[in-house]
Every structure is written in structure tokens, then in C-alpha cells.
Image 1 (cartoon, rainbow, N blue to C red):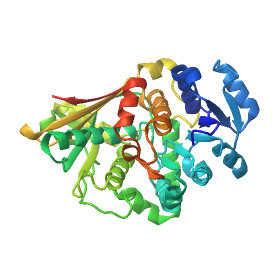
Image 2: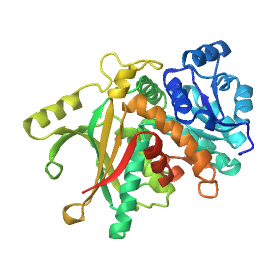
Image 3: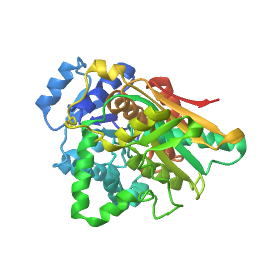
Image 4: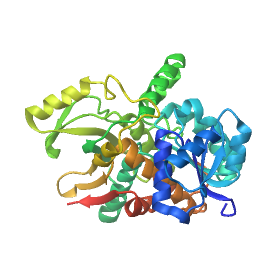
Length: 389
């Protein structure tokens, strides 16, 4: 793979998030990276490259999901592809197919569990045969959550000899908007569920991505609840629907490193007392995307991205046995931090994780990257991973 001309190609680099990825790669790695921008229009690519002030040494590739030959040619020239072109259930499969055929690594920002289930069913065996590592959900959903649980359980095994059978993921603080792509993906998923009733079963099942494994009944996190031991009320968290499925897939792919009795849920803190309760009830009753969610391709200003942040805690055990892992990000979750995370995820595949450690297949972040991604995100992408207390 190292003999391929490019290390990375950013597919969809003229879109809002794709531009952020391209800007980050150039700013962080400069001439230390051979990469290219890819999209449907040569003129648009040239315009966007000039607007971002990128040098002509950043090559441009015309490729389109409606043109399989163009995707095949692109994938055969690069070690890995970053794709920000969603909703993936509309545009994603041709690129997955091309990467699998070429043995090319692939990372995306998918939060679309029904489509991901399709990709597992259709391409996991072929990816294992070709050596392609297909890694879904390499943005805010689900890297901080998947890797946060991974860190907690790794530390728990070292300290207490076994993982926690129960982990609670709680968003302590967050400033930033959900992406327009997330909103669009949810909308298309619900439309598909109406047309294909079995999709609704996949969406409800926390183990729908776990290769047939079914574990214990899971806490749902669907209603506001007071958690006195954590000092706060908690409200439903919109990303839990995808993150929980990914974390259970990670557990399954790692030979149930967290145990076959593992339970997990995600919620967001709203504070203690009556005010915390009222806020939790308000959050539960509102549309998380608001009345006018951003459209795909739209997003916050640079100032809004720079002023964003998040802090997520993962709680295992209680009393003297309790342990807490904390993950933080220094930009808004849906755009600023996500664009850095997906870029570093791709580089983790090309530079850090050998195929004898992570062979071909369809992955979630934790089993694909392991601790190498934590180290890379801390070194480059403004994330921190720490144990508390």
C-alpha cells in the first residue's frame, strides 16, 4: 500500500465539512503528506483550493458516486479515502464497494445504523479478503464515546482485573451545533424505515450491528432521570441511538473484551435540583435539531466552531470500586472537532495500525485503532483522554 501515489484522498472536499478536513490536513501536516482533494467538478475543486489558499501541489481528482469507474481509479491510487459525502445511505455504497475492491482503507462520518448494517452484511467478508479497513463513524459520532469506553475498560482491567459490566456515558458539557448531515441522515433513515419495516427493528435494537450477538437488556436513556450518585439530572441524548450500537459492535469485534453481560447507555447532564429536572424535561420534549436545522453543506462560522467544546464522562462501578474516564474536545463537536478526528483516524490507519494488527473488515473505531488513535488525537486534534479521581 505504501507504493500508492497518495496517502490520503479527501472525497467531498468542496463541501462544508470536507473543506474543514482539507484545511486541517494542510495546516497540520503541510508537505509531510501526499494527498488530494476529490469531488464531482474540476472547476469547483479549483475554486475551493484557491479560496482556501492551498498550493497547486495539492492534486485534484474528479470522482462521482454515479460513475463507478472514476471511484475505482481514485481508490486504486491512494492508501486511504476520507469521505464526508452524505447522507451515506444515498451516496456512500459505491465508494465502499470501490475501496473494498481496491483493498483501500476508508473512513466516514456515518451515523446511519441501517446503512451501516447493510455495509457489514454486504462487504465485511469481501473487505477481509481484500485487506480494506472500512471504518464507520469517525467523527463526534462515535470516536469520543467509543474511545472513552475503551479507555475506561482498559484502565479497569489494569486496576481491578476485569472490565465493568455497567458503564454510563454522560455528556457533562457541550457547546456547538449538530451538523446538517446528521439531521439529513436521520430524516432519510426514518423515511426508509417506513418503506422497510425491518429497519425499525434495527433502529430499536442496541445489538443490530453486533454480528448476530444479543446481550442483556439495555437501559434506554429515553426519559429524564435523577442520578443522585452523579449529582445531576440527566436527559436523553440524541446521538445515543448510534453510539450505543457502535460501542456494542466494538465489544463484539474485540471478542467481548467488556464481557457478554455488558450494559451501556448515554445521556446528558442538566444539573441538580428542580432546575435540573425542569431542564431535563425541556430537553426531552424538544426537537434536538430545532425548527430550522442546518442543511447538509451548511455550518457554523469559524468563531462559533472555535468557541465550541465538549466534555464527556464515562462512569463505571460505584463506591470504592468506581472509576471515571473523561474525554474533552477543544472545538464544536459537529464540525471543528469532527473534521480533525476523521483526518487523524485516516492517518492512524496509514501510519500507525498495521494490517497484521487490524486486518481487513468493516469496523467501528475502538477495534480498528486502539490506543494509537487516543495518542494521535491528543497529539494533534485537541482532544484529551484522562482518568478522573
